[in-house]
Amino acid sequence: MADGQRPIFQVTSKPGIQRDGTTLDSQFFVDGQWVRFYRSRPRKMGGFRAIAEDLAYPTRGVFTFTKNNVNSIYLFNAKGARLLQVDNNLTGTLSFDVSPSGLAYNDNYLWQSAGLYDSTGGGGNIPIAHPGVNLNDISSSMDKPLYHITAGDTSTVFTTINDGSGGTIDVSGGVCVLQPYVFAYGNDGYIRNSNQNKPNDWTFGAGKDANEGNFSYTKIVKGLPIRGGGQSPAGLFWSLDSVIKVAYVGGASVFRYDPVGASTIMSSAGIVELDGYFFWMGLDRFYIYDGRVSELPNQMNINWVFDNLNFDQRQKVWATVVPRWGEIWWHFPYGQGQTECNRAVIYNFREKTWYDCQIERGSGAQVQTLRYPIWTGDQPARYEDKSSTVTVTIASPGVFTWANHNLQIDQPIVLSTTGALPTGFNANTTYYVATIPTVSTFTLKATLLGAPINSSGVQSGTHTVLATDAPNYVAYGHEMGYNKIENGQELAIESYIETSDFGFPTGGAVGEQPTGQDYFTRLIRVEPDFVQTGDMTMMVIGKEFAQDNAPTSTSYTFGATATKVDMREQRRMIRLRFTSNETHGFYEMGRVILHTEPGDIRS
Image (tube, rainbow, N blue to C red; front, side, top):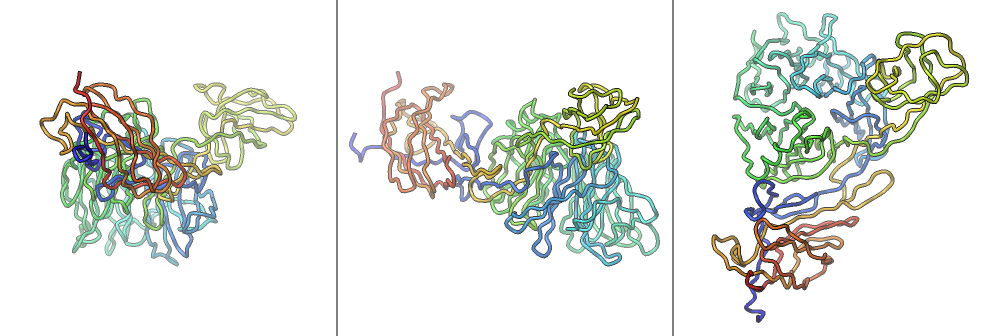
């Protein structure tokens, strides 16, 4: 066929990655990884760099604060909290244990945090945190106190907030700040607020703003501030079955609470705000609040998400935003046996489209006081053995002491000694951590399902503990370059995008049509149009019938200056996959041109 008679296609797939329905029925891109959409075109996502690689526990909450060019990052976990301090480029990491004294280890903690200026005494910036015992049950009624610390102070630890009369503020839900008030909430719709700018004064009385009440039938699980206009401060509170708006009115009432709509909620960490809009994942759909509660439309991957989300781990779903690209991310455990987040579903507010990403992150903080998002890994990056000398009590059970041991429940332990261990323990035998009463003590059990071991008799010599397979979790700075940098290595991140089907049966060069021609499509040339760094590859993926398997071609490699890629690939219906997988590789797709001609008539 003469060149002038050859039909010309363009890649016309719409922005977003459609997971629901069939690939043939999709006008959107049908597959992709580590790719976002900008100006309706695919673009490789930014890379990440490890900023702390020796975290002993998965992080279950992050809070950030910046002052005098020192960035403080609080990472909350099953034992308490760790403070990282970094410069504006997230380098020079210093690490401090700021866990509350006496807080018992519990791998069911899911932390909420917020910041307030404390006007009492000399004043100061105060991070406030709450360890909800609800990682496995959003409706848990177990109360825990609020804690606070002076922001950026490396010489102190979190301490309990005082209610102003010698008690503590204990709730099951969490904490938020509607400047200048602290709000705590939990069981049976309970909400309570402090006096103005006084996190340690919750007393009631004349001339005071502290207040409390029950404003919902079910537990309050999350609160966030909103712009209140003439009634400020204002906020939204989510119960298990509704959304409630609070606004300052003064007088005896102080605050007014109004239900604004019914909704469901997947997790207390799955709510996020972007540009004054609030987004959250419900039990079977997504929601938006823009002055009213309504469904966030999703006809691209809603079934893919909710059919594959491990509902038993629903409280591990967490949301964050990447404001530069207008994205809302929901990280979730994909697969019924998956216990940690390994996927993210993404809504692009600017493009009004959906896509997804394979990524293992368990918590994070968006760009606010920091230049880059901070996300933390929810799977150990590596394991290592560590040891220390210990002491053990003669008691029921025997309690071992190892300062700031960073052990975990069920972690394997081997004992050795220069003398004699108490009765109940033997050298060179594997035991398991049973309980962790404090950050520096622990008990042992003989089997994973066993009870803490009692000790008796006499002991002598120096005892040593070897903790095997100690996990190391990692905190990352994201949107940094285009590589992954951790464990002393800088590696490529594979990013790819796969088009929807095209060809003569689906309408030919004019695009999707209700009728087409029953010819195979022979692809003879592709004109790449990319903003590109490094080489990329292209694969032709095609099939004869709608439900056929889609064999791939050999890979065609093209560089940033390539004007054309010649080939002779014949399929009845064709998709193309473009991949970048080399260090510092980057791409943003433009208008890729495809040269085709009719192939064989279908047999």
